[in-house]
Image: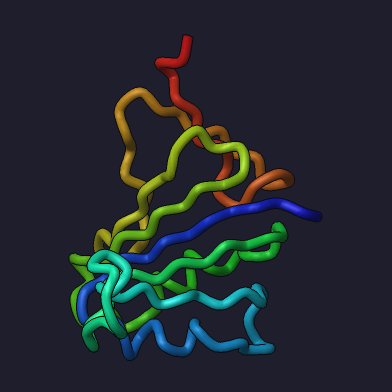
Length: 132
């Protein structure tokens, strides 16, 4: 089933933790790999620093069910800095997940509503409730 979803992971000091997700791994349910985004993207200069806080991936299929659980299980050096942004094809905006007590939980945004639809989307559809 074709379905686009973008995922952005923000986390401090997580280069070592995220590095395996930048390479293919046949044992993973999903086949796409995260791309490291370093500070050169923001500066428009050279190769950037050694530190990276952002990784991005776009899924082109409805095949990333285990991603949030996998991210949740990683040994984050600074778990309080971990933020996962997810935008599914039909979402009005990105949803935000953060680690609370070791579990990735969605942070509710004002004027939004999530409709769960496992047959259509991994995370459901996030809609703005203030649309006219």
